[in-house]
Length: 259
Image 1 (cartoon, rainbow, N blue to C red):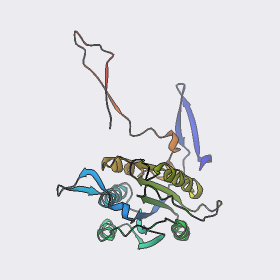
Image 2: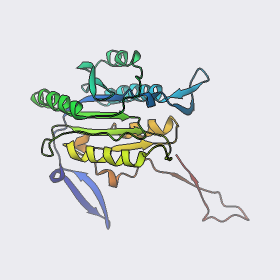
Image 3: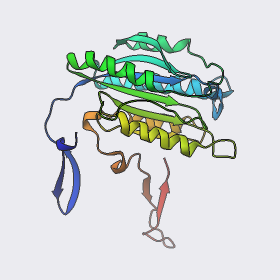
Image 4: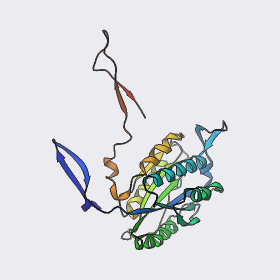
């Protein structure tokens, strides 16, 4: 994809641009971690007055993603897998029907602690489905929702086989003597770079807040064929509000509101 990107200089600044090209509809394969850590309570309270668990937050984020993605292009399609020790199909048929996609998530629940997370079967299934997607002038993307703070995912996948793009949303505990989320994150970054056909994104949240999941998921709405490198991504931005000038105030004072 690098050859399709261009740096355009104007007014002394360099900005990102894309050469005109056909943008394919997506087949998006969600892979949802069902390890026991997906049942960890978050700081956000649900409508029932009790704390959300990660699994419920993930479901809500995916449902919102599906509706927003279809509002952009109703031709996008979705399917679902789960991840315990390895990946397994939850809904194999790709669909652009939002209600059908959402129904696939309703009965999803966590299992016991899996002990390991092997992504090989997930990548194998994605590569297989990507062949059918390409035959229909579509592209395939995998979005992995991962929730383990001390289990590094592994895979056995050839370096030169890049048939799909991998995105990751990583929910984890804060670092402690009992876990190593940084090591897990590094392994996920390696996986994204190892298998992705286009620019894959990875976001993480250790805050336990729903908004720290929903915001990154909104950025994953971006189409892989239209992305800049994640290192160049500067959204969401903080909003700067200038304080009104007063007799004692300084017109240069800036109040920053973090989003």
